[in-house]
Length: 476
Image 1 (cartoon, helix red, strand yellow):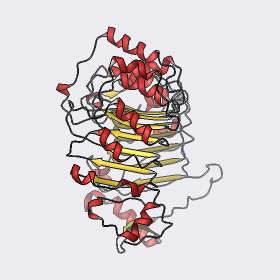
Image 2 (tube, one colour):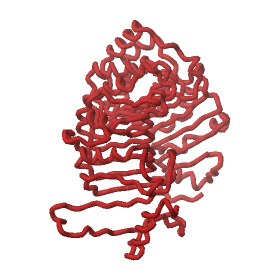
Image 3 (cartoon, rainbow, N blue to C red):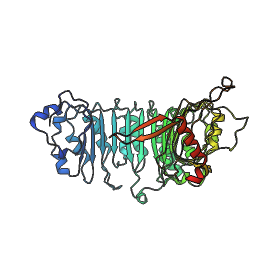
Image 4 (tube, helix red, strand yellow):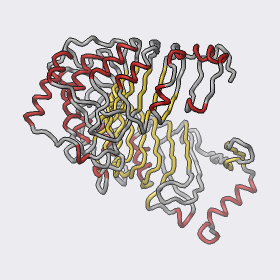
């Protein structure tokens, strides 16, 4: 295996057991400072690796499945990798009662790898005992860590308390939950008294993520109240979060109301993603956002059930970019003269169902809209069966950029003929016939790489196309 000595941006090595490294190549690999991906199923083989030859590694990702190992012992094997700045360990044993990651193990990580900036550990964490809580108050902070990505079977406030002391410079915090464990074995929701005692524990921290800017949390049916503990503590310490992602899964409890969750960040957030993920919260009803977000500029909604554009625009008055995926869209049917103008500039719809009159409503209210993407759209109550066309009427819009795709969506799909007519300034065009340019656009599959092709139609072709559209129902 030959590689140039200066090949420092080597992307990945998949499955070390299939790669043979000769003596000459080892000197090259010693200089690697990029990502390394290793997946092994047998503990014996993992234990045989001589990690000392990888001392220059900056990023290490380990995927260890179908084996049982002691985390402390395995970390000791990696202790020669003192240059690491990114460490990711994926170790799922699907046994909620097998706690393989302890407070001692996490402390060992920082002892062995003092330069870490990013830590991702996907494993089951052992609860911190009462005796250990007192030692946490004097723990040595890991000032270099700015991002953590952790996966819990449930979010334990004792660990949040530890992270608050350990990572004072944390900027990004991703706290997710398992979606494939047996939740019947998880602890039941605690009472209000314990909630208050846990909150007091968090509030007794010397500091609570003063640099935190971005959080990503997942909400399941299992104990939504620890999520609120985290959010309550952030509010009490006046931490201003700018970027928020919240996912509500299928088993999400009704206690975990989306409006309750996002209201925590309504005063500070600039970028918000709400993922309902087929949750029962988003089914068979119109989902309304109730909190006002005066600073929000980017909003993304996924699997949102039925969303009302009027509701969105009213509650996000400074929104600049809106992205909605896998959702049904509605709005008032007729535009009104009293509509409040909205500064929305970019709109993207993907895999949605929508009434065509929604576009007129958007055009009437969002007259600064310049960028629009329509990807896999199903138009409700349109006359496509009669004419083969969908009329998207946006009389007040002057788009700079329009993208549209249709590859057969998850909604009921029809072949579509897309006709775009955009008029110029009405005053300057008086007395003149609008110039219409027709183009044929298709995917060119004659080459190895698919690419879009387009050419302008001649006058004869235009007449043929117009006659085809006029007679669509008879000849289709």
